Image 1: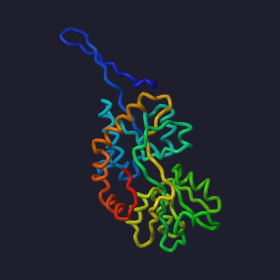
Image 2: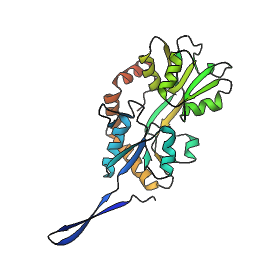
Image 3: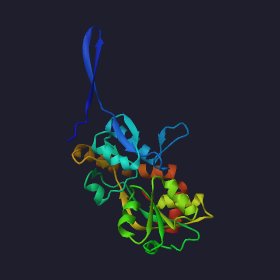
Image 4: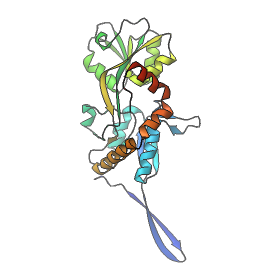
Length: 259
């Protein structure tokens, strides 16, 4: 079991020495560029669904929260080197990632969907693996992993930012951008005249908290927290706070919502 660590504080009172211990901060890694899950407020402070979840987790554990803003493809290396204690960053629990890190029980279900241009011939995932197709993906995501293995005929544009993938579609330079269904919905709403959304997930996925494999104690604590948080309606409240329009739209289209 990975040691939680202790900070020893020495104090003097009325000439007597005393000591107190405090749990080390819980260092949670996330990339603060994926609203409304991971983002910053106008004052530059971390906020969003994942931040609220991390705050509730830290409170449950009796530890101070420290959010480390790290590029998505740097999160697993930061976890493995001990810079952070866990990852809460809309990370899909994949077999590939599970070979190097551990995951909590899933806390959210999602899936890969498509943002396509209004003039794009793509109508479903079946239309992607065609010679001459140009598919945009964000580096390190499951969309990138899927495209690299399943879309050998298409030409991939591997980009560092979600906004770059969206722009490629808006400008007609890419036939589709592969991302999660919620983000696809939101980006289509921002660009209704130049994009279409194919929201029905063609590959279902789950998000979970990433941990070091030897940190089974923390994993057990997180699993108990997630079960209690769901039972108390915590996830529903987060959806109502950050995603009310999306919840309603997905329900109207008969597409399962995240939580």
